[in-house]
Amino acid sequence: MEIYYININEFKNTHNKSILNNYADKNFNSEKRFFEYTIGRYLIKNVAQKNYKIDDTTIILSKDGKPVFKDSDLKFSLSHSKDYVIACFDKNNCGIDIEYIKERNFERLSRYYNRKFKTAHDFYNFWTLKEAAYKLGTETKDTYSAIFENNYYLSIASETIFDKNVVMRQVQ
Image (tube, rainbow, N blue to C red; front, side, top):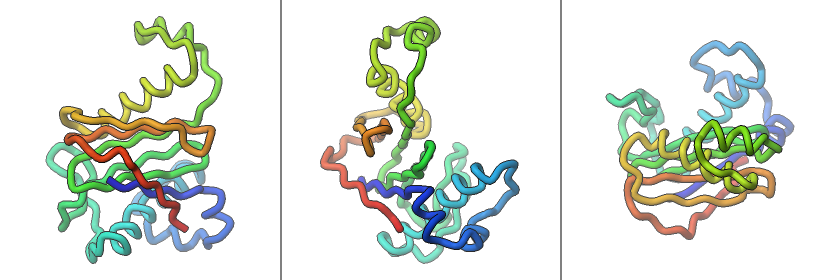
């Protein structure tokens, strides 16, 4: 399993916005949403072409509604939060979630989810694993969680046991 990410602000400072119009296959209500979506598509398609040698990076929805490459068995999952768009790639189904760590009312969240969250780590570990498992869309066999760039919590869910020496690469 490999993870690739883009810092949205750095990308906006080094790339012309018109590049992203090639990845906008729908209309957006906000510029923030435009950047999250198109940078996500840019990330997925460019990594697939450059690192996995996939020529046709057309993305379609599978029978279960998950985005997949039309003509490849390579699996991917995408997430974004605040300043980052991040994706995992694997030969098996995977799900990824990233969340910016901010103060929350843990007492209220504990009541809502009927769990005891004492710290941000407790809550974000629960939440990102829940979201990653949802994106996985099948039985979770293995997970990985980590702090990312000091202010983000990241989790991955997989349908198979995978090597925890996860490498993260920034895409320019």
